[in-house]
Image 1: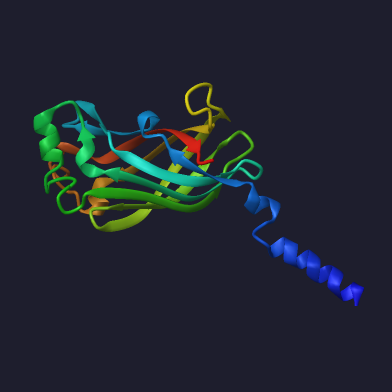
Image 2: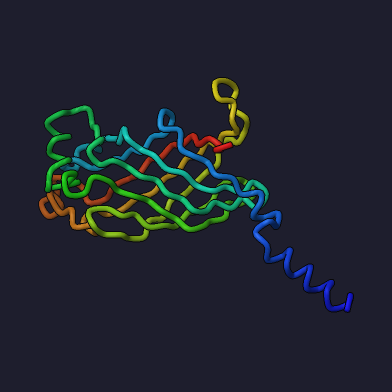
Amino acid sequence: MLKILKPLVCLFFMASPLSSSWAAAERYTLDSAHTTVAFLIEHVGYAKTLGHFSDVSGSFLYDADTQTVSDVSIVVKTASVNSDNKKRDKHVRSKDFLNVKKHPQMVFSATDATLGASGSGTVIGQLALLGQSLPLSLDVTLNKSDKYPFGHKRFTLGVSARGSLQRSAYGMNYGVANGIVGDDIELIIEIEANQDK
């Protein structure tokens, strides 16, 4: 009887959510005051315009033992776009670009990814924008993981991510055919995320 029970007990603990790999995963929430989602886009071929979104929220799970990132959700309020030009920002919020009245947010989500020993890797997820959800790949680097030196003093992760997308894939075609506004968008993401507990 003991010979039968022993492997069953071992199997239970291997499958149980209390196993070490599950227990080590912690929830991290984006610190909105220290998180930046920015973009670069070409203007008539002369130079690239830099813009960012001021309203960003989200969270993810991170397992320091396995370097695994999972359950990623980053929510951007599209109306919060800012390129330091009121007239241009009004146009970007219109139907020609972000159509913020109909689509008030865009969301990046990812199921799981494993970073390398150096803390770098690729997170492949989906970007929901303008009613479409398409694959988006981000090159991610974990800059620092440590207890915050002041204030809340919670364990904090510092993350840099870079990626690119073609806006025409989402139906944002204004200025593409005549080269007034570039099709390719470079993404620049800098994150500080605090452990929830």
